Image (tube, rainbow, N blue to C red; front, side):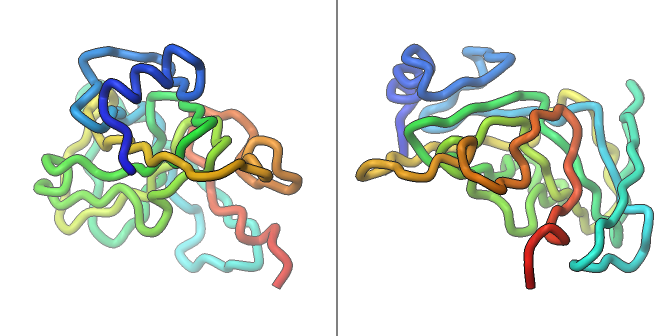
Length: 178
């Protein structure tokens, strides 16, 4: 079941959902709009290796915007820090962003109960697009969880993305054993 605006507000009031900064105007009927931070990153290497730490290079989006190009994976971040303690957050792109040919996540649209951080975005595009810090980039949709939770993400031993950061985080696949 997807939480309605009233249920999201109730969860914010009880601390079960945290959004910083919070803006009531960003709350939709059943979602909350999030915005692109000023931080982007690209991988330094052209060939990525799943067993190695692939380093990134930071880009700060200037006030006049930044043009992203096809064929490059950009890592972005939401301007909003979020916590979700009793529901499963899903991040979806806004339709207006999709209509510009921008995709904000390749595979990682679902968060875990207990996720406490800014969201890293996996940004790609089909043609060059100028983007801006602060632009609406996605929306969080919250699904109710049925049953008790044993393994919250923020308490999970070995969780790779628990360190709070307002910057995009590169893949930590290399930390897995395979």
